[in-house]
Length: 235
Image (cartoon, rainbow, N blue to C red; front, side):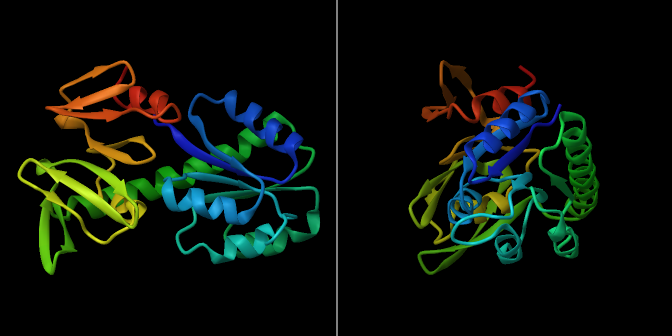
């Protein structure tokens, strides 16, 4: 079963707790982050691949509608708000659903099912595109352009503004954010195991405790990623 990463953005602690509880009832959902405003959410979105965003509208600093409109590549967004009057604006931005507080678990499930259906539909289209793509990608580093083959890339590690690409031949440091590199990698081959590490699943030697080994390379498994990582391995 595929696991979908969720981010909850709401300035009310009780509302956040309810959403976390609702998510816990659905094994396919993994809460990757919980925060109280759009700026915190932006930081999480820049570091973590989020599939479903539960977004309140009345937020401090920047409201949910305005925040949504700033996202260039938004995940599936489900608005959660006590105000009905913003629904038209939300759907104009192609929101997946609009939940008016207080909402029950059954209505929440309907919204999640819509989001998952959209994600699966998009994945099928991407799979068709992927079939026609090469098994590599290009990056610039040290004044050169490198062709990185998927089957030679062992893992990627976040290094501040750079990302370290460790292959079976060398280490390359392109001036790219970690999330930008993640978007270039095929999800059928590469798995996020930590906020700072993405690994090639075919290169795994063994697992031990909260560590995964790729040859002599020892990589930590983040507590927020362990469950989805093991599920991806069929464990």
